[in-house]
Length: 297
Image (tube, rainbow, N blue to C red):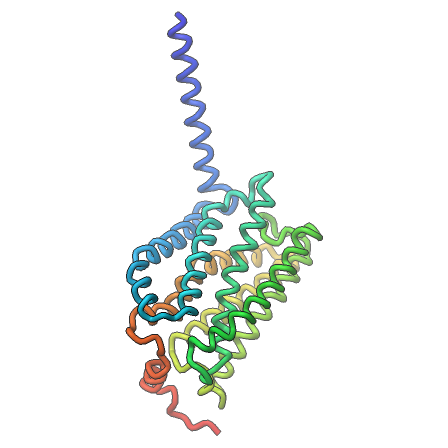
């Protein structure tokens, strides 16, 4: 009789544990923004980290032979940000979990700031033009990028912890309008910068920008993404539910695909070529594409 009671209690405990685990898994996959939102983020970020891991040995050999400290730093930064982004994607359930607001806000702040640092560094490199090699130009811009991102982190931290504005909690579009005003300014600045670079590509200053088609395509993609995000934030700030959904699409696209795009645009060639100084290769690619056929006055 005692054995049956113990067995019964053990079975009940086992069933209860299974139910808790099952509920936790279902919440992790389906809670908050739904299955497809979480699946795209998790699968895309995991596959990119897996790709980095598979290529790591070859990349380390190239880096050690090249002795380029700035590329080593940028590659290490990409690894760090990719792992942060992977953790952010796997932790989506925190956004909707009571008691997890602080952890979610801190993780989101560090992840978004890391991605912004990489983005600003590449932007600064593009705006440096062809006056120096890519490595030298990027070296000069790391400090500037750090200052810009530091100011961005400080501003967001004030909004989060001083004013209590939920910048990174997007479960309801009826959040304070001041939040969407900040995101409008943020996206507007990025859109204007990318638009300026596109204008330079089609003006008399085009030869001052690194002559490489991949950079031009990168700028087009980022201009479109930020312009859509700007439009979505403006709509959401005015109470449009459609804008809130649209904004979520841009967030998913950014966290799922930006880091692979950055790697393909900037770092991939450094690991494929024996020589890290790529300016002549970039110029040849643009010349073959007919980029310099017109005479600019």
